Length: 224
Image: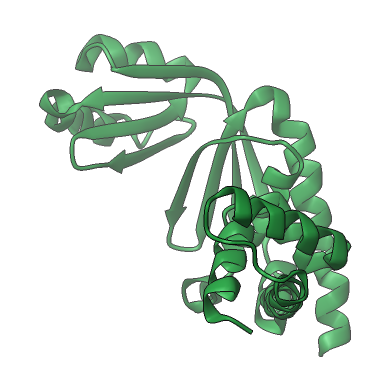
């Protein structure tokens, strides 16, 4: 099989979370998908690869994705995770010139805020904070360059193994993406994975993540 064909197929599949997830779960008609991808690659001006070669690349990639998705390390780790929800949060992003003040004020209110997470970038700082504290932060820091209200933070608390276990976050976010749920912010803090999304999607997202984790409990028991 042409290595370039395999690479093109891999790049195309991995750029689409829904397609990657379906391939990992084995719910894709490989022959039909191979025909579609062969035509798509041709339309990109990269020649028309043989359908059989594309199908073989898909088959090999699906096996690799399935192994990653169902690795015993991931299964056992998720089976020992738990979910916490913090509703009514806001996302405030402040420009670089306000960053020192933003970090100082956030640190000051951290002990009494119902929920607060701070992420520092190269040119801005983003604070995810309980909505009742959002206006107070703005009044003390200054106007944010972006503000998103009506958010919910879902926190997945995992064992320490998550630090050295690849693929956990991709599974969680992949399930949400494949079900049409947009993630506004995602933050990793030691063993906590914090997913911030629109409050209107919170119940659906919680149920999906709950089902994943409890489904993994059964898988983990069978793997022991």
